[in-house]
Length: 360
Ligand code: PAD
Ligand code: ZN
Image (tube, rainbow, N blue to C red; front, side):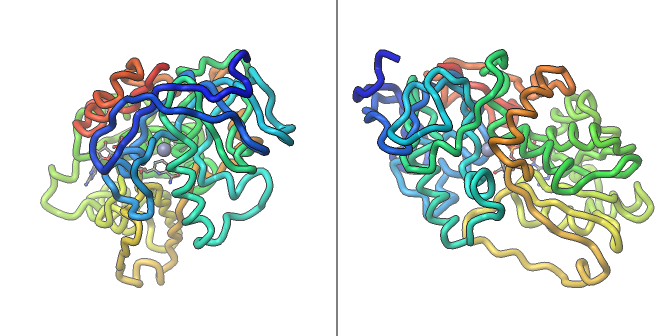
């Protein structure tokens, strides 16, 4: 592209301190060795961006440019980058997964993950327009080349939200046909879990949310029942156990609260149940549970990006989307121009959106 090798100016949504984003111009240098510069086309707003914006990750430094569900086109590459080429269509994939994926088999140890995580959140997966810089010699690996026919304003969700929820059911829990599932939280992630449970052949999928407005979409996507914990006098885990006899086979927490994490664990079958944590707590939070919950045989696990290997699996998911194997477009309730980024966050806070996609 004509801008290759030049410092460019672009708009970015900058949070100078926890709270509101301001859209302003920033300078982006040409990519250094191992780096990739991306022209962003669309990005989804995820609850994790809101967590970052509200200062829930104490190690994240402000000012920060949040955003990590982007889709775009490679503008230029730095020296030594062989795996990415200009004008390829790509997805930015949740940076945490960079470690587990293409060039390592396991997640980086926690200390390394910590420092890398925030560095990436701050610098990499940014809501910025029209160019997006990925600085670091390994950043070429955080982008996945996808089918050129894929609509970027739709598949941007595959960089985090859809892939996380769908993979939590398929890869992390490995939901079996005929099983029962409970999904706590029916936002973009939880509804993608519902889609994954349905694709895996679950016979009963119970959605749990305090916002009844989410129920219609959950049922459209495969939930067989939807319940609001506030409609019951007793704890929701007791309600779910009564509804299913011995608890669900698989439960998923896609909210990010301590009490719902424990309720999700207690909702699954005491001997054979599997509970998957997806929701994020503030960094440094601790959770305490009655160990008996695990002693009897339950399995408690977590997931990042639904356990997919970024560059290998995400493009395949995009191909499945193009083959109409599932309809993730139903998760997109709003599409807004980038300048309305704050409106997009307001919709999320008010519980009125599932996913808002910003267009650059
Ligand atoms: P969202 O805000 O769109 O959805 C959360 C849903 O939970 C909403 O529908 C709420 O009404 C509902 N809710 C809130 N409180 C309760 C409650 N007490 N009981 C029942 N329902 C409740 O968020 P999202 O779907 O974008 O993200 C969900 C979580 O997943 C969030 O914590 C986010 O940070 C995390 C996440 N994790 C990963 C990962 O890789 N593990 C990736 C992306 C997001
Ligand atoms: Zn996300």
